[in-house]
Amino acid sequence: MLEALSTRLRSAIEKLTKKSYIDEKAVKEVIKEIQKGLIMSDVNIKIVFDLSKKIEERALKEEPPPGLSVKEHVIRIIYEELTRLLGEKTPEIKLRKGKVTKILLVGIQGSGKTTTAAKLAKYFKEQGYKVGMFSTDTYRPAGKEQLRQLAERIDVEFFDYDSKDSIKIAKKGLEFFDEKVDVLIIDTAGRHKEEKGLLKEMRELEKIVKPDYIFLVIDASLGQQAYNQAKAFHETTPIGGIIITKLDGTAKGGGALSAAAATGAKIYFIGVGEKIDDLEFYDPPSFVGRLLGMGDLKTLLKKIESIRMSQERMEKLRKMAKGKFTLMDMIEQFESVSKMGGLYKVLSMMPGLGAKVPREMIEDVEKKIKKWKYAVDSMTDEEKIDPNIIKRTRLQRISRGSGVDEGVIKEMIKQYNMLRKMLKSGRRKRLLKMFGRGLDLSDVG
Image (cartoon, rainbow, N blue to C red; front, side, top):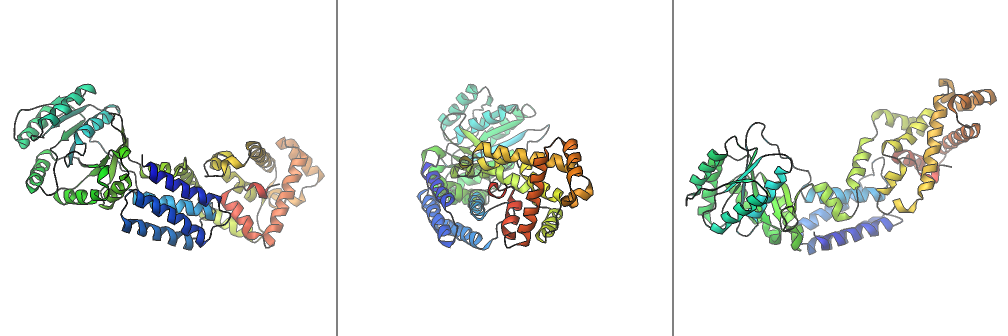
């Protein structure tokens, strides 16, 4: 699926992760690779250059938020802007409780509407809903028969009424399925944006059916022309959403996705193959993550957001910058790593980084932090504020109470004092960066 685009994007990200320093030249190089990939995937040139401009402006002007390095911040910007280009938010289908949720499919001839109707029916059936289908297509008898066969294949009830009047068929179908199913999928005749008579018929169908969702089915091979189709249908009847079909078999898929998203209508599903199961609910963030080959980047970004510094933590960092911080403050910053699922898990989700740090080293550091926490929990408030008052007798008491070796406690106090000195020296920025993004292995002895 969009293999050429994915290859280009992955190559761009890989080159970026290998850079030792991110400057304007590095940013422009990665943008150039992204441009090539998008243009090869038939994305509109204006859209490509608008996207490039946004990435470049953000990458060069925005300060990385706490928790991200410059390199990670640029990758995140690329991820966010591509996600915005391809739909941004994950749509949601809300079914009507106790009533039939009606879905009307529209689109041009050959877009794959009939097959998509069956794929949708199977999708909802597998979620435990009772589904029904019928077709108002009076122009292509073979289409109605095809839908009947597909309905039998997936064991979904199909209604047929012999008439040349699509409006009459719609009325009979609604009567037949009234209160019998949870989801009702209605196929329609293929239309062209120039055929005003058929577009008028579609408006009449909408008035009769009163659908909860109208899905425009678009063949991915249309590329940029998907915009014209989506716009024409949208002007005729509000498009609840879009389904892009045949995304697996064309190099123009990126153009179709971006063009459809540009109409303002949400893309709900994508067809990724010819089999009845080859229909995916469209989640733009996950889709972009797959294109970029970045594994579970979405999860990592969510975790980073979940530990975003509160005003209280920001205040503590300000105190730390002045050299005023306690052992509890230090431990709290280290524990932020645990809230992200542990060092190894975090590093494994970062492109090009996880494999470079031995698991044994990471585990050793995590064990050390846990022991420090146990020791601090056994201290008095006075000792937590000023650990330098901890002498032989206090050290023995804390060791007995926490079960932590005296040598480990001494090492923690030594680390604490080292951090205080760093804060008072010119290395303050380095330390704040370490605390902002979690524990940096190179900074912990």
